[in-house]
Every structure is written in structure tokens, then in C-alpha cells.
Length: 174
Image (cartoon, rainbow, N blue to C red; front, side):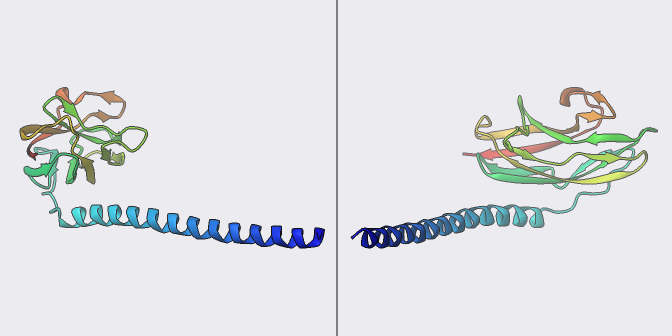
């Protein structure tokens, strides 16, 4: 009888293991589908966004559109070019966006913004893609926003004081 109990226990373990593997497979498929849809949504936004004009020494920041119409908690994108009009190379340059009193930030968990720092050599330009989610702190209405270089070569300007910026309008719908 002891051998029969061992066989039943082994069969039960195999059944539980198979059920566990099936559930794990379904969960992984669901997660991949969710992230795949989100990735596809951002890729389509980036693809649809027009390219900005070339940045120059007189216009060091150019953005893909001067006016955006977006919904709260929905993704948006700006493409931008940043030109370095100075005699020094800029390192760790990351544009920032501020609408009213709301600064779009990148938190440790990914936050509302995805943009990567780059170096911009003297008298040259770099292209950026700025992905963001409209925060709930921006209610419906029209906002004058500022796209600015906040940090260059060790100097932090703050968005309000940056000498390198472009103003854009964001229309937020309910």
C-alpha cells in the first residue's frame, strides 16, 4: 500500500506542476500583450509626430509642433532639436517641459516622462524624442508651456531661468 500512495502522490505532483506551468504561461502571455500594446501605441505616436525644423544659433530649440491637443492621463510626444550655440561642449543635456506650475518629471519608477540625456558638442545639434503622459494636475484648459534645457555642462538653470527654451501651447481636454 505504501507504493500505491507514492504513485498517487507523484501523479498529484505532476498534475499540480502542469497546472502551474499553464497558469505561468497564460500570465506571461497577458503581460507581453499589455506591454506590446503600450509599446505599439508609443511607436505610432512617435511615427505620426512630424520632424522639427533644424535648430540654429538664433533658435537653439525647435519642437515638432507649437500646439498639442491632448487628454489627461494620455500619452503625448514632442520631437525636438537642440543646438549648442556656445564654445563649450554640453554634457548630460536633457530637455524639460513645464506647463503652468506643473513640471513634467521622470521618477525612479519611470514617471510621466521618457527622454534620454545626450551630449551636444559646440556648434552642433542633437535630436530628441520626448515621450510623456499628461498628469492629472493639469485640468482641462489651454496652457502656455516651456520646453527648456535645464542642465548643461554642470550648470543647472531651472526651467524658468534657462536661456535656451521654446514656448508651446498645450490644450488639455477632460
